[in-house]
Image 1: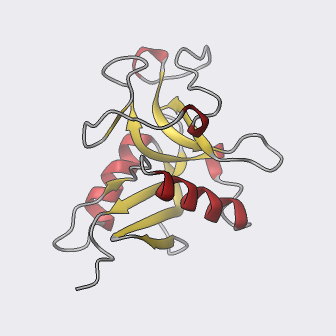
Image 2: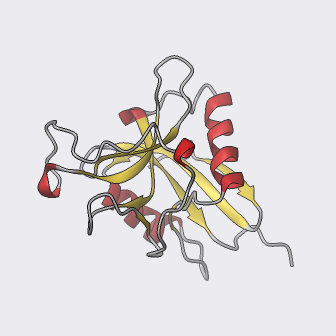
Amino acid sequence: MDNKDYEICIGDNLYKIVLGDSCDWHDADTYCKTILAPRGHVAGLANLGARKVRNTIREIIQQSPGLSNPKGKGYWIGCHDEEEEGSFVWLNRNKVDVPQNAWHPRPNNKQAKACTAKGNDQDCCQLWERPKTNPSFKMDDSCCTDTKYFICEIPGYCARK
């Protein structure tokens, strides 16, 4: 990964949009946890359950030319439905409870395409670059084995003491 990452504090948490080499969903989460976690902090793919966080990150991506056309046509985030199709959970195991309009337009759970992931299924969440002109970067699922840029979250990193 290179140093083109974009950082923003939202509340107490640091969010890093990682723009180095793209990777699959599981490798992206491992990278967040092992490479980006500063000493004394835990990190992982971003939880965008809070409307303010989700909308702020989407606006930054939409307004930044270097971010609005990502490799892999999206950014990995920290939710999936690998255990039970259609039941999305964040990496902390909490149910994904976002309004319908946060999805594009709804995850394509059984997308018939060449997917080498478990069950040939789209199980991992992304902010998707759709529509192609003026993309909204809403949540969607994709094959976990696709390679994309990703967004990490480091909770508590921006807290002022």
